[in-house]
Image (cartoon, rainbow, N blue to C red; front, side, top):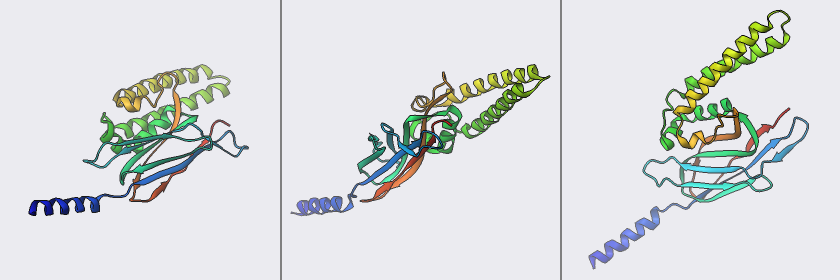
Length: 213
């Protein structure tokens, strides 16, 4: 009789402790140019990665519809890393690396990899890219030092390629798939930490900006 009572009490505790699931929804959009209004980014990939220690490593995934809307339902309450990857817009690798650097702690927890120096290396790459752009601009406008600036451009191009390889080599496989080393750009992404509460919806709208000007 006592065993039955204990089992009954235990079952009641389990039911009372179980949390009602939440949800995550949003809209993803972009602008074709500065003169056209927002357009839905249909087919965007949306993923949720569980950050709670000891929890099931659940990954929730969906894609946005033709209106750019998406919804992930029956999400266990907790902390998550949200990944939104554009179907339509693109970004230079450094923009994607900046997203990695800003979320390096969470990404290392999820995927491992040598991400401790990612912030520093991304800043170094940004400085190289700035110098490269200046050298290229100067080469186009200079009447007597064009060769010098072209040589500077070639030097910074080589340094930038080496720095990107250094960053890429340290990334875990799951992140390497989000960056194209061959072209220097890939689909835009948004990474952010969110908290899903019991029986509540998290609304997250993503503006991927202008595709080109």
